[in-house]
Image (cartoon, rainbow, N blue to C red; front, side, top):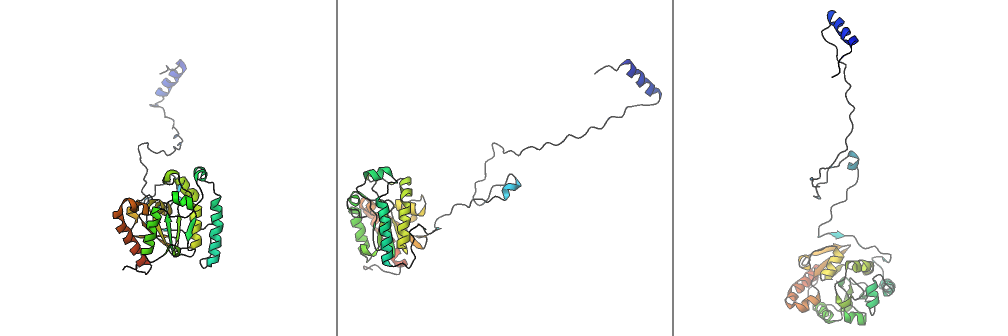
Length: 283
């Protein structure tokens, strides 16, 4: 503390003689408040529960639209709307023309370089362009790659028997795959390959406009319905894709390796027939 000067000491002494007992203290101005930015504790965990949106950090964020929670199956998926979409009452000739145009596009497709370089030919689809029922499989195998027709190998022969047991012929339905090229060594299609070919699948669905779709195996079911669920969890019930009711069941190639699975597949087929108001010939 600094020692007062002699003049200051004399001034204080004069004030004391005048009866001054203390000096008034000057008022200190309150400090200006400085806004502090809101921070998030590094140990705090965000609330990821879909039904409880996270609390906004600022009022402005409250006005921002939040993304909806992902749907839970069973779910109604939007109908495909590709460029070659045809009216629901289009004639057989119109549908045949549209399918031929789409098949020509597929024949020249090189979106998947590996598949395009190893295929013998593309395998588009066969059957009734106005079928009530569409069958979707995984991908062409060696026999399909050689002939250009889906489901003609051992698994295809078993599928034909299932079709006939339902009282149909192959010409009554429409048959195609997730992929239109054979993957090397018959491996499972990759996500990129399925995505590259999805426009063609959606085109076929839009042109044929089936009332019912049967997904044979996990690959077909998971790609069409955008799910990761196993086929065992998806079967025995219907899903909705556009206007089509979708039934999922085991792939015929799985039945060749596991004959016991033929019974649940037949139960699925009877479920389909009942939904269509039909009965199998053997019933």
